[in-house]
Image 1: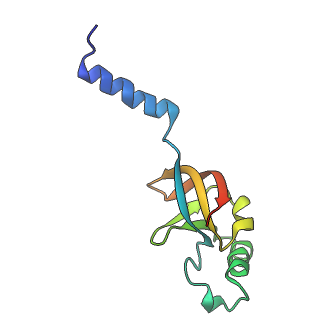
Image 2: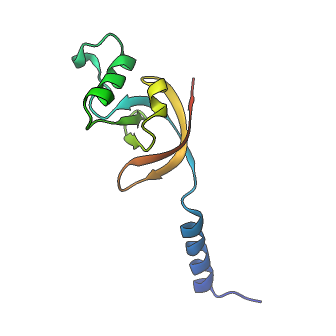
Image 3: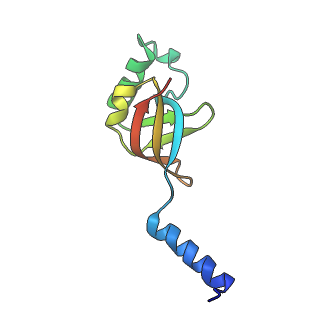
Length: 110
């Protein structure tokens, strides 16, 4: 049995809608969307403290992953607290239009 190319494309395209985007691993540092890479202007004792305080005190800022050049807001706003200012590996799905990373797992990285 031979499948026409258009039918095959339709089947493959439909499969990605049903199964969703594939998970990918991202490596970077947990930060906040206010300070991003530079916490010095806040004059807080440590970067980790700054990240936690920025997210806690300024309700409009969120935990994010900084991969060196790009920043991704994280869907999970609880788990990143324990990794504030630390290098991590995050497994999840990136929504490219919004730069939101849907977090499936966060773990420390070296």
